[in-house]
Image 1 (cartoon, one colour):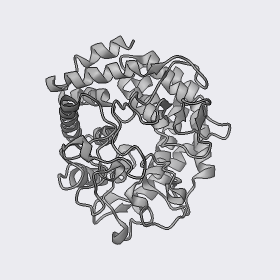
Image 2 (cartoon, one colour):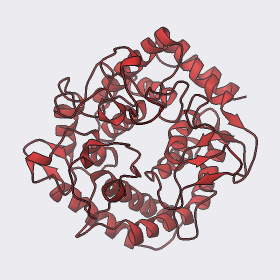
Image 3 (cartoon, one colour):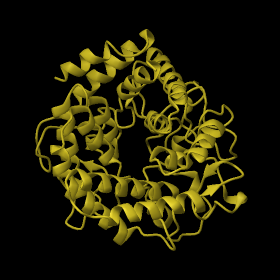
Image 4 (cartoon, one colour):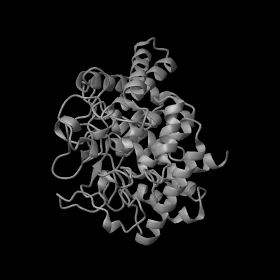
Length: 400
């Protein structure tokens, strides 16, 4: 199973990455399960070491699909379609689907970041076809409508439920941005950028499918202007949420400030400042295993989950953002350092971790959720480890 993926990794990256990459490819194969409700195809779980397994993750599966798109296109396509299988009539897409127990279950109220169209577009670009876009256009439009109806922030932008109920719809559990903010429908930098990206894909896919709908372009342009002018702090050179952008006392060095670069909403000047002043800054996010989820110079940095731990998926998104602004030099630095660190931890521990020690220390020193029985990063975890896609991108950046 997934033999093409296993063969591909032998040709990717540096010699010291080989064992780790092959292990990851084999872990993908071990994580595939037969067809069962609610899916129409065999499905890939988040990872056999996930503490709440078996589960299928909404934005986790997107990171897993990035690994498989070039060499295992059928599997990748089927996971994308599985991801859309339980979209509700109003456009809501649930987050994690819990497959264990007596009944399959998922939240009917809280979703995950809607990054799945990126995988759809990657698939179509790599395999030179638009059939998947035909199948995914309506779900995209429906999800946009859901965000407009349910996550519209005051004045402009969009929010995640983290700010109202701390249910971690952003996927960033216990994120530092919400520690001291009063509940309210304020624009979150990540949610606003993710919806901006939805608009841009709807605009692009409308053109591909010859559908006349200029509304998406107009909405994207308006949102981009809001992001560039209202969510960027010229002094620090980073993007923030609406409640902290003009209040230094509330500003924190959180990786979410990179999302305008990732989705292409930043100006070139803004993007380069984020890249050089933050992503490549060893006193902020460019740790021994980049990128740390919180800048190491921030008072709230700690060796725990999204409060300082390194997630390879976010390094991957950061690298994509760099490439989008013609900064393959920066992407190469991020990817090489992260993969070197991941390989080193693999050599020492024999597994792929949910998230990592940002300073290349012992994994046992990184905490997950102290208030639960699961207070260490999960082993054999695929959902946030697109390391094969990272190695592939490294090759592309290195070749130029």
